[in-house]
Length: 285
Image 1 (tube, rainbow, N blue to C red):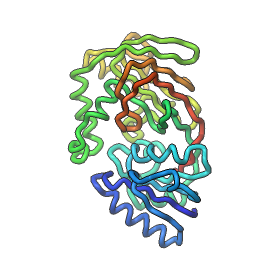
Image 2: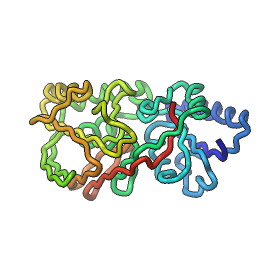
Image 3: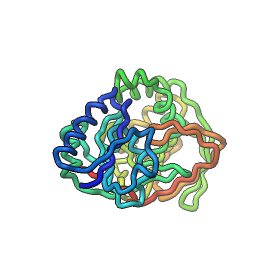
Image 4: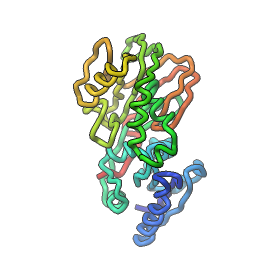
């Protein structure tokens, strides 16, 4: 490992990232590795000049902000999980424990993973519209600071009691689909809580396809029944839910707010999504 860029989100993990940063710097100095450090809000293209490895201390949103600078390059991504969810780290087998995460960076295996290109943005994890977006975007930061990832579970129950439907038109695999839905998830990595729950057990980071999950029902009880079937791998396509895989997708849009890897995003145009296969190299266990 040489010429490391250390990218930190100082607000991540209830500010544990500052402690983690010190431990990572100690590791780099001890191993006589050249490095420079930058806060995520100060990252610019020039930050990555002559860099071989990028170590990110933060959550999924922080990692996703780095992706545009390293996609389709020889740069390697190392992750120190320090966010609310850390879903990508969980999918890659990277422990939350800081010492073990540093060991992965030091001795881990390099894996090439797919990335979703959503318009001009990139996503390693997923795009969410409707209910999924409400949970991610409307959960107060104070709740996330206090309860961590469980804040999303509390918010999930609350927002399920006031589900809203919207009409979407989707184009994929030379097919056209019109659907009235309460939730659409387009996933590169489908895990919803660490690796315990997922919208698809077959959802892989390097398979060249995205997994699409659509829930149509507005009744909270029926919604949870269908949602539980999905996360326990009992998914079916029926009048209440749909599941399919595709390498590309177009969602006709009339201004929607969603999330990309946990970051609130307003879509003003049609949402065009493509897979960029095996385009980011990541260190994993």
